[in-house]
Structures are given as C-alpha cells and as structure tokens.
Image (cartoon, rainbow, N blue to C red):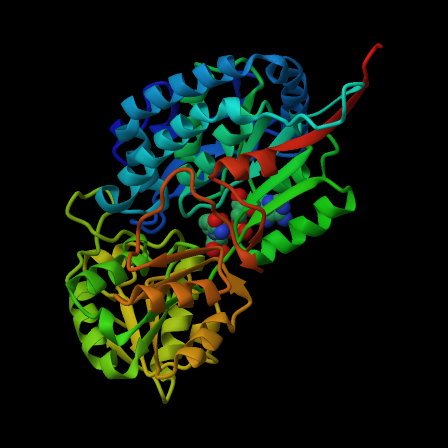
Length: 500
Ligand code: NAD
C-alpha cells in the first residue's frame, strides 16, 4: 500500500485507498455512470495506489456546460483579474511543490529528485510566465485614413479541451492551462489514465483562485471520455499531447466538425556529435539529452545518437560509464536517478525493442540489456539504461519511438550525410548538435527539420520558448507568448466608419 501521507488530506479514503475525484463546475464529483478506475504503481507491480472516476459522455456534457457558462464572464473579465488569479495560483503551486512532486513520482514512476520535483517547479513557473504576459493579448490599429477606425481584437476561442499524456502530466498541463486561461478561455483537462493524481491536485489548487467552471478536470479512458471531448460540439479547441497514432485519430474527428486543434506528438530526435565536441560537458549533456533519467519516456529524448567515426568508441565508452553509474530505483527514494516505466504494456514494448537489438547481427549492447529478473527492481517495471552500438538509421530501433531508456549509436563521417540521416524520419520534434565550432554547429542546426534544436546542451528548456514539432511530431506551438496568441485566440477585424 502506498504511503498515504503522499496524498492530500482532503481526498476521500475507502478501505484505506485514496480517492481522487473529478472537478466539474467547482464541485468534486464521481462519474455519472458510477464507474471507477484503479491507479496502479509503476514501482510495485499490481499495487493499487488510488481510485479515480471513470468518466463518460454525461460527465463531459456537464463539464462542457459548466465551461461554456463560465466562459461568458471569464472572457469579459479585465486581463488584470485573470493575471492576478494566475499569479496567486503560481504562489500556491510553489508552496505545494513537494505534494505535487510526490504524487507525480507515485503515479508516473518518475524519480522524485531528478524528475518529479523539477517538473512541479516548472509548473509554477509556467503559471507565473503566462500571468505576466496576459496583457499581451492585444490587437493592432490599421492606417486606414481619417474617416475610418480599423483595428483588430484578439479574442479567446472559447472552451478548450486539454488532453494530457502520462509521461510528464504537470508540465504538459502547464503548457496548456495558464496560456488558455490568460487569454480568456475556459478549460476542461482530461488526465491520462495512468497518471491523473497530480493533475487532480493541480485542479484543487487552481480551484481556490478561479470562478466555478473556469477549469474542470475529467478522468477516465481516452477512447471514452477523451473521445467524447473531441466530438463534443461545445468544445471549441482540442489541445492534445500524446502519441502520433492517437493524435492522428483525434485530428480526423476534430476535423470532421472543424474544431480548432493543436497536436504535440511523438519524436525520434537526433543528437549529432562532431569530433571537436568531446569533453566532460559533452558527456553530461548527452546524459541529459537522452532523457534516460526519465526512463527515456520523453518526446524530446535524443535517442538517435550520431557519433562521428573518429570519436565513436571514445564517446560510447565515456557515455556508457556515466549512464551505467546512474541509480535505478524506487521513484520516491531521493537516491534514485532513474525511476520506473509507467505500466506493464510499456515495459513489454520497451523489452521488445531491447530483444530486437540484442538479436540483431549488427548491433551490440555496450550497456544494459534485459531488465533485472530478480531483486528489488524485478518487483516493478524497471528497465536499465541501454545503449546499442553498430546501429544504422534504417534499423527499426532507429526509426520508431521506443519511449524507454534505450539509445542507438550510429556512426557518421560526412556532414551532409549525417544531416540527411537526421532528417530521414517521420518525426521532427527536437534535435541536438554538439560542436565547439559555432559556425559548424549553427549551420547544422539550421539544416535540421525539428521544432526545437539545442546546441551544446541537453536540458535548457525555459518558460516562454517556442515549443512544438515539425512533420508528424505535431501541429501548432505551445509554451511561448506566440503559442498563446496563435493557439488560444482568434482575430476579429473591426472597421468603423467615423462620423464626419
Ligand atoms: P496516448 O496518445 O496513448 O494518450 C494521450 C492521451 O490521449 C491520454 O490522456 C489518453 O487517455 C488520450 N486518448 C487516448 N485515446 C484517445 C481517443 N481516442 N480520443 C481522445 N483521447 C484519447 O499517449 P501516452 O502514451 O499517454 O503518451 C506518450 C506519447 O505522448 C508519446 O508518443 C510521446 O512522444 C508523446 N508526448 C509528446 C509530447 C510533445 O510535447 N510533443 C509530450 C509528451 C508526450
């Protein structure tokens, strides 16, 4: 049984099991259909840690009605009112960072120290950032002559459905909620099946500072409650983050009714190492860009490692030594660098890729391999960092998003060739370039088909930067001021014939 002190005191308990509820119109409710979903621990197979409502059509309908009603006054409130509310939420989130982080570590399996706590901090920063730019939702005046007043207004879209993945639920909620609210929209968040707990707590914190119905949260299965949101005529925009496969289906359904849509999808990001880049900071950077501390469960993981032939062996040796020294273990333990894979399905999927790599005649594991079969790690969905040498860009492990702690190292010699290989992917979310020759690094960065390129660093995401994918990694941008304006507002042109 999970340590119950991790859960907020306000959550109901039945036979010792904490129960998180849905927030609809300012009230905490069960599903109209009376169904529940069990939330299980990634770190201890089969352990149920909480229950949440398994929402359906009726719950979505109630949430949409509430959000539509709340929209009328929220949109008309002065921007400074919305700004102050978001600022107060940012303060409250900061005060409750630890609670948010603990719940995140518990249901996502992301290690508390390296992942869950930093994510909870970024959430507060995102609310503060969008509070700050709330006054930037403004239009322009046109040079239409003395007899005309012509101007534009940026108006909110209406009700936004934010559909979240499980890998970093708070950060992704932070990409959507404060931006949408700052611009005057109301929101219905759909938490991921496997990781709803911290999203429910986020709603609890927000609700103290928002009018009823401005932010609603529903839980349950994607193909039920998620689909009901996508199809509902009262939802003006679907802002989806998740897999490319599900995103494609959502785009079809939202497209049928011509709803606004943004998609943040999967990735298979290249990381290109030039020979002049090899030093300790490169190895630290590659550890970060690999997102192995998040079990590789990151859409921006630099999982295709393109190493120049001259430094191929050296970089692999040094990287394997660093990754091999990271501690895999209980996500709630401060000593753990790496936590657990979210669930059995993902665990098996990652294992399938590892088995493929181990059986491949050209590849060899320079680190890791199959997960531990006994000992404490075998009690949860723990994979160990795994690096395959001898890969080619056309191998399955180099083409598909593994979403596990698995890297493939691909040798290269010619710059044109490596750029061609890096771009030879259906994805285009992130990329990494490593070279101390800035001209070489920037020329390469500009040639890459990716929405976010980092040079000589692996972390470095800041609130306010543009975030989104090229190609099948997504449509639209989030996180930034431009993302807020383009993603959560529409332009109205007003032309006034002035009296003589
Ligand atoms: P997923 O696509 O399985 O699910 C995402 C969300 O969609 C969940 O809330 C799920 O319940 C819901 N959903 C599922 N079917 C639905 C349907 N038919 N209609 C409406 N909603 C539905 O993704 P996941 O497994 O939770 O997350 C992992 C994926 O997300 C990876 O591919 C990863 O790359 C991607 N991701 C992308 C970004 C980004 O910013 N580009 C960020 C994080 C994760």
